[in-house]
Image 1 (tube, rainbow, N blue to C red):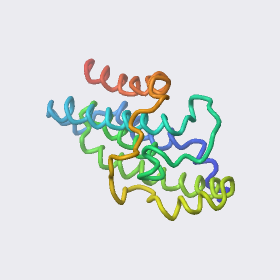
Image 2: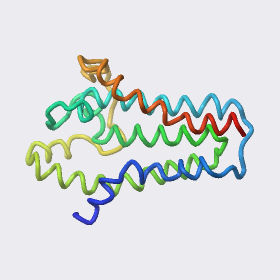
Image 3: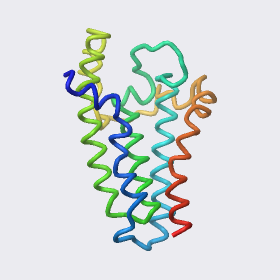
Length: 183
């Protein structure tokens, strides 16, 4: 699986490539203000909210000791951050009025992150062994089996720190809003 190591390190840049296209081109723009300014930012904010929820449990960007995370959204799916990123990227494609790009961005994100996950799962299996193997068997990769509201840890002691660390994600929408306002 070493062949996927490079895509692991470039995962978010690779998954966001359609956003570069959305920033540069303006072909076949939609003029639906409801979709552009209602649905798009809503999908984006849902993605950011899932990122905040997942980061509260993962602690990756907060410099806290890493361990196998199976709480919060990680009880439902193994890759909530990749789901969140993909949703945020799809939401962003609405702002420059390129609605046709949203399904392509969704498929692109799923494709890139699927390659990343192949590498990541092997790495985590080597790192955590049997406990990760059980986790692989119990928790689905993308789509939850069930969503129970008990014990999901929607808010924990790391919420404030997580919001401050993830606040920069909101700036991801800014270039597209500026492009739309200037265009």
